[in-house]
Length: 520
Image 1 (cartoon, rainbow, N blue to C red):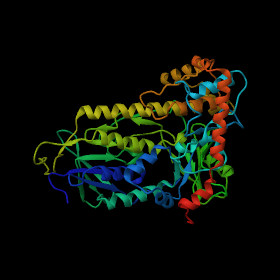
Image 2 (image 1 turned 45 degrees about the vertical axis):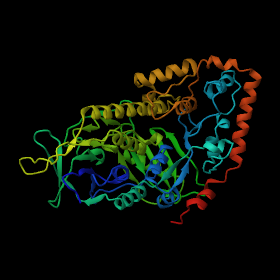
Image 3 (image 1 turned 180 degrees about the horizontal axis):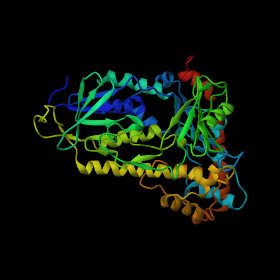
Image 4 (image 1 turned 120 degrees about the vertical axis):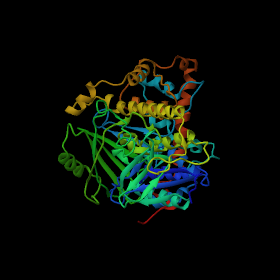
């Protein structure tokens, strides 16, 4: 029951963004002082394409107190140790972006510099030998970290593959059990305060009204509140990221459930393969400027790893972001705030980071003991949104998206492929100065620095730069401080430790069956 002292939060839109937001707010906000309402339309269809994640999703689920085995069983989930890239640098070439580190730093110098010394002398050892997640993934093995172990198993890094629609359903149940009110209805009107332009209420198709103080726009690409109501513009990144479409189609599961995502480049983009317990999620990503939908559907049909389970569905987007994710009393989260193609599985991460950013800057109630009303009698907001908080939220949101954008562009730019008009465009296109600076630094000395706590750290940047053929002209000079014999011995010892740890791990498929198996 809401009162005049209750701060009313209204979320527009369900799906992953809406229900992740509702679940986090229900878990974090004192419900005696807040009410949370989620409005979603039953007429909006969803496309289940599977979902690949990165390790930070574990922190989100842990914050909510979710039982991992129950969650994975409900969502038909599997474990993920990284992403394997096929044909990106050149055809028939493979590399992996694993979640765990390569070796260990020595004398304050990142491990990859000690490895680069051999590479630059033409005595290259396979980089996967020094990363447990990489080695285990290639052998289709998995187990949970073993904190008591003195081996590399102690800190194994992992994420999930799961059915995104089932995840939203799971969080819907979680949220409702914790007091979130779910309203099924289509928003037909958005009411605003004539003085402040703050949103005051939503008018639904059945003539009912949902009043609120803080509105969270999870309405997807259409941006019902942030764009259509408040008029926030969109920053278009198609110049750098031309892929704007995908054909999604699930197929039958395979005998081996791989503990990693596969991303295979093709003539006009790339294709994802996400292994769940009950099926494979497939998607053919392409640029509509270089390939028609009909040809994309046909090409995906030829490239499916198993028999199709349903008809192909089309997805369309524009890579880019809102110029303001928070304006007035409205915060856009998910696709309404921006989108970067799913190449590095950042979709849910962007939702998660937006939620955590909102919680850290959550607005306060007005000091007035009771709210006022506008000329139509609608209750005005009890919310005080500090402009400094809004500006901080938007600044950090922008920086996060810019850095992820640069990381994704790197995959397209650092390539030898010139076998199609699409890849020739990617080779010749201009790139942001921030990305060029990172590339120049790495090429000159092998050095990498994490900017402003950006999502992808030095290990991620090294994985892609090295995997896609960028070779530095030198390595860190402090590597030479270590005796050459000792350096070689250290490399040998680290590789042996990774191999020994991998041999102790069970197969991913058997581990899943024991831990969270489902026959559905």
